[in-house]
Length: 206
Ligand code: GAR
Image 1 (cartoon, rainbow, N blue to C red):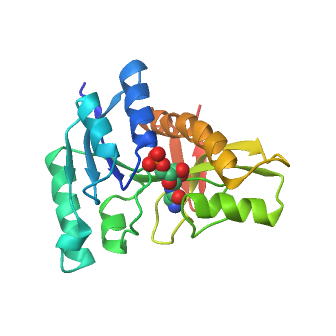
Image 2: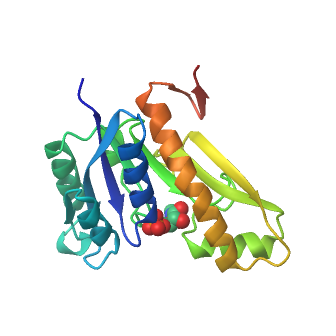
């Protein structure tokens, strides 16, 4: 049987893309990344794709008159590569309900906090907010993408303590290590058909 086609959307550095690609190649997971799409032409993720020999391309949102036409182009490319699971990995664009409805419970996102805490922020903003809040625990969340930002059903979370000596930067480094474990785990569960979405909850079967 052929492997499940995964498409990754990213905007920047691409470490989650790379770790996912490496784990999928190494482990017995029935999925492969068919394409990386970035919306920013200088995204470092592109270089990673090249060295991993994964097809990649830029679809720059600024080249499109509307969100709808940008997203139509994304869908076109994902369809060409027979993508059945879309993984957002540091993709800094909000997807419209039209895109989300096209892939019901087939889009995942990774967020660098324990949702539902610290929603609506991105990257270092999240870690800064965590430190300022005085919370003692943080982590990362992989969730299905719905029309509401950072609010879709939660698939995998990994928690770490916030240390008194932590800065946003030191926290980002430790959370990222957890992200690199959490995303492949979520994709593996998806591939094994073990994720049952019931309203806001995801039941992990087996
Ligand atoms: C990751 O920390 C990811 O959780 C975060 O951006 C970073 C991308 O890193 N995503 C968000 O903040 C989404 N709201 P990467 O490009 O090295 O994978």
